[in-house]
Length: 367
Image: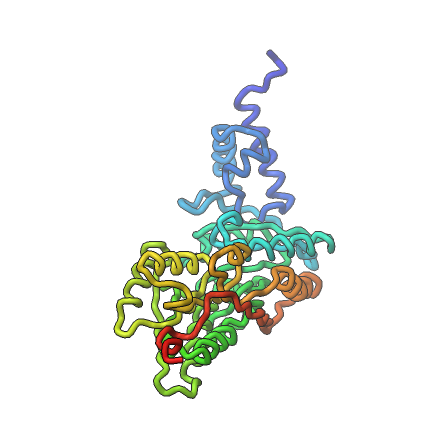
């Protein structure tokens, strides 16, 4: 019986371990979450909470409601301390919920970093991409100091926080106007300018772009390039229609229905997401429209499943390996130089013709 620690003894041991970790500077500003601490210390939640209460009485930590446990007594960071050579990737969703085209380049980048002795850590959660993500981001970055952060599917408020707080980062995507963060993305503006010109050259005069309402910076570039491409066409009767949806199946279907009930309806659609392409083509089939006999469809994005769709979608394709390798260079520059870099890297995808494009039906009939 004497070998079995009493509850208070286990609580005290847990408090001692937490106190030592804080004094050694292993956690900065905030303690990790309770679940993480329970798993790493191999104690129950009740034991952990009792130990945290003890540290609160001692004035070591303070509980901020809804945010976590803030560290009050923090040893100063030594001057000249080396930054971590690990890389953090931040996304609003877990990896398994991201599109395959994203997870493929993330896996490729992870392998490339590993070859150079660096680890890639993935963090996710909608709280980091809200209208005001400051508290969540401050806690995350202070708990997990990394030499470089990679922002995936980031919105304007998140990008502004990283720029304002001078946290070394690279945006895997496009940056909003007025921000100077370095970024690497596909050249959506050039792609959609090309797409509009291609559809015009096939004889389409009323073409529509389908975009989600909550547009990211890359979608803003998409719309600008599409409208430019139509306006630059030598055809005075060319018309560009931009239709927004909320990225749900129901909203996409409703948007397609409204478009195709116009008089006249568009004869070609540009879809800015490979998943949404599936919904658009399926909804057109339900309404009795054949692709490409009645309407042409073009996908701005590539994903591994698209070649298995019939008719095979016309699309713009960029290798995940190319994206990972292109990102690797600025990431290593940040890790090795310790300074924030500026500038953009744009990748021009290859056009895959597929079988979803054809001249408009009335033009074919005249021929």
